[in-house]
Each structure stands twice: as C-alpha cells, then as structure tokens.
Image (cartoon, rainbow, N blue to C red; front, side, top):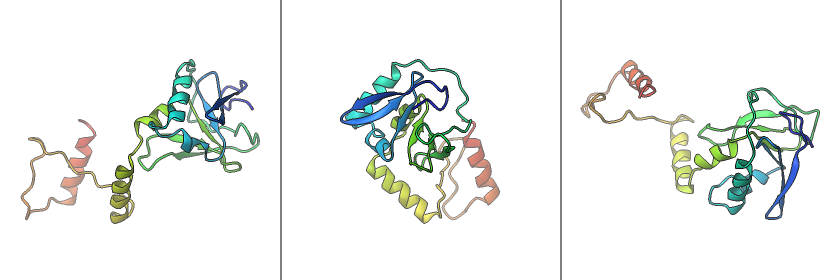
Length: 167
C-alpha cells in the first residue's frame, strides 16, 4: 500500500496484535473498525500509536484534497467528521470502510474525546433540540442576564451568539 498524499510506501506497524499502516509523514491507515481501538486517550493502543506518529516529520500538503483509498486504489475516499463535535474531519473509504488519518488528526481525536457521560449529555441535548446544540451566552458584565420574565428577541440572541466568536 502507498500513502494517498505522497505516494510513498506505507509501513505496517503491529500494536497489540493489530496491524496499522503508517506513512513517514505521520499519516495512518486503519482497516474497518480498527480506529475505535485507538481513538480513546485512555486506551494503551492509542497512546503507543500517538507516540510512534509523533516521531515522524510532518510535511506540507493540502489535506482538503480528496484522496484515493490506499487499499482500494480506484475508490475516492469520503470526507466526514469523526465525532458529533465536528472537530476532526477524516477520510473513509466507501468500499472497504478503511480510514485514513493525516498527520496530527489522531492527536486531535484524543484531545476532543468525550467521556461516556459527556456523550450521553450531548445525545440528550441534540435529541431535545432537533439535532441542534444550544449555546448559552456567558454571564459577564458584557452580557447581562435578562430578567426571568423577559425574553430577548431572536435578533438580540443572534447578536449575542455572534459576539461569542470574537472573545
């Protein structure tokens, strides 16, 4: 197999009885469902792989470009978010369900890993709000809390939410 970004040969790496394929630039290819054995920062497999990938040098390439699957060479991989927080976008093969992570993406997955309690709260929030997550404005002198009997207009709420992005 070859790296979908640089076309260099992928090296097999055996971690805890599971073989993954890594590139010299820090990318990694997982066969179907293997990523879940590495995605949690609490799992030893994930810690070992992250340490191994951090030893590789990163090269400059455009990660927004679509790539072909290292295993199914003629199939273009789909781009999708790995978790409901939509922080890390990964490449997934629609043919073999293999996943390609570019350099640094496994570290981002570990940084944004949700605990089971956080997942349950997020699922509840999304279910009760038709898939939308409610963002409450911070309580500070710039965003005074409105009296309980007076609701802000929709426009005022949108302005408050827009201002949150500039802090």
